[in-house]
Image 1 (tube, rainbow, N blue to C red):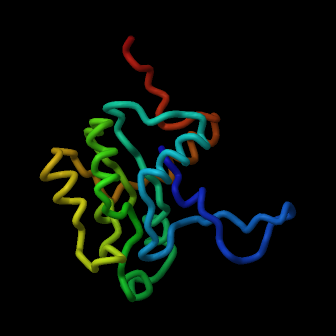
Image 2 (cartoon, rainbow, N blue to C red; image 1 turned 45 degrees about the horizontal axis):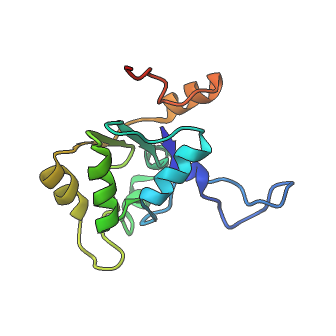
Length: 159
């Protein structure tokens, strides 16, 4: 599981080492791309291989349960992957069969540069045949993985 929110830092109070505290969830409209996915995997000591199923925890479902409905939908633009040709090519080259997230749509609601809603649904699901699994509660899995020091990518690969 790729904990994208854990790799981002809040711009508030620093910890005892001078680093800002880690975020529990991504902010509304916050984006990430394949480079961030690779960095999160590297930080966990794993690589994203061909035909891996990607589980991405943004913390957004936790945010849903931590705030009021009015606050959640005020200025609604959920965080997520942002469209680029390089990102689509990255998914295609890796033959990713399934993208699983704790967001409503697996991608930022409105692309920051164009305002287009959900273009990755067309690029990934329609054009590449990638199954999109949305609104997953990944907090318990993250806790279990942290408890035993593993990642969600612990299934042995066939040789």
